[in-house]
Picture 1 (cartoon, rainbow, N blue to C red):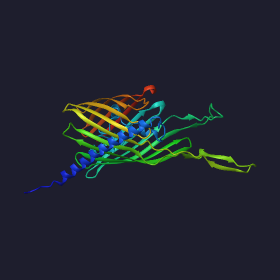
Picture 2 (cartoon, one colour; picture 1 turned 120 degrees about the vertical axis):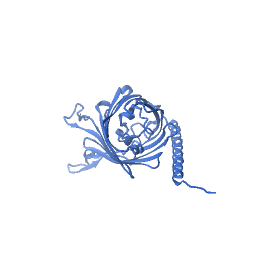
Picture 3 (spheres, helix red, strand yellow; picture 1 turned 90 degrees about the vertical axis):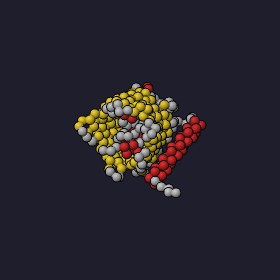
Picture 4 (tube, rainbow, N blue to C red; picture 1 turned 135 degrees about the horizontal axis):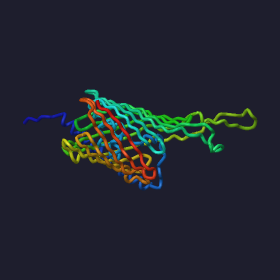
Length: 356
């Protein structure tokens, strides 16, 4: 009797089984976390983390689908949602995203990805949050001192992703984070990790999971926390003292998602997706979305963001996209998304990408 061993197939099966076990464990952890969250529902953790700009979604395509992008990720938007999706890039891709956020706050994101044969896919990205100058006000001068101050945030990162098998990929981000307000600033670093598993024979079923913003706390420091304090009597008994400021966690986010091509033909594709999201500073919620694409050129999208989030304002999302070939090897992607924000009205997203 002759027995042939296919080591490659055995490894693929082992990786697949391990990934499915990881997914099941993740679902169990989310369920357990939800139970504890219900037991402690009287405690609201909103506003207890630093670098809140890291929670603003990136990519008009992803937002148009309601943020249900963990398992859909297959382009440069993967840099934010699931770095494992970056392994689906087989050329070079550059991307720019602009967000008109709430109260005249602006967020700009730029990313680049390139495949390195026999090594994987490399990426780099930068994100800047900005707002207009504001007048300095104090308790003694509530109408303003005549001075102006600025505030903003910055993110710089690099990525690496690789297909371990035809069905399974993994990716990582390393990020430097900085925030400032007037003369104070805070900085930290963080890591993201993501996985993506594809089941080709089930209508391109994809299962993805990612953990974002794992890193140390942030604490403001600067000249304005130093105060002059007089000790005892006399004019000479003056010392400099620093205010003791708290340090705050980064907004850690765990996502697990599923996506499937319900319709797939040479002319049409309909993708349905859903994400379960567990943040460390809010209640759990679900993102759902869909994308219909005609001839892989024109797309329409719809979704619902932050479903079941306690006291959340986010909701319906809509989007459109155009994928146009400029010349033989250059494609231009233009996307737009609208997001309803309840009492805070709405948010607009604009994205432009080039694949070459």
